[in-house]
Image (cartoon, rainbow, N blue to C red; front, side, top):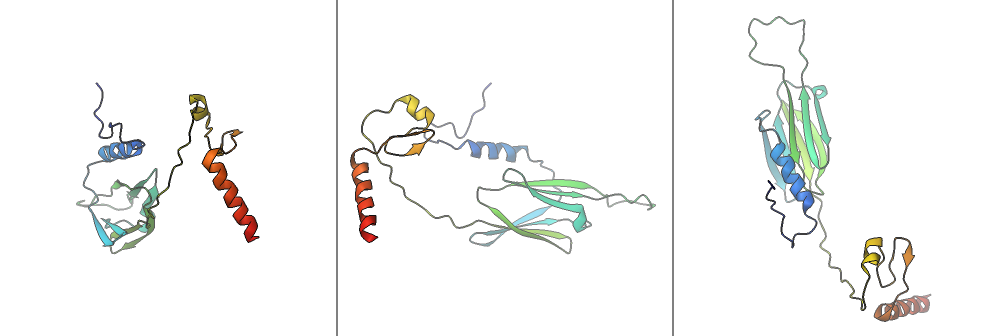
Length: 180
């Protein structure tokens, strides 16, 4: 039986990494320990706060694995202690957060049993790029090998510029020569 994908539309090209991220989110443990908050501190600044009372800095680890922030904690049992009643268990945990592309970890600090992890999302410049439309036919072998018409060098071949692009390149070259 095939699985229904949210990104199965032919209009959504290159979104397979989103589908993988959603799969990772669905596989993350639903264990509620340790409890956490996610705060928005600014337009592009986030803070994850985990309640990790009883854990020392040496008991905690933070890593980023494939756009996934992983916080691990492991407490060691002290074999010298004799408990008459033990209500506070020395336990280990792993809490994962899937990060969007471009999110960076600014830093982390442990303060009074709370682990604060600060995240920042850098400003993204919007850019518009015009794609030249070349005339003529391109053989499917040229596309597969990386060749593209219009003077672009890709793969192992170079095709000379043609048409309007050649004229534009000539005008640009002569303008540069005049400036020199």
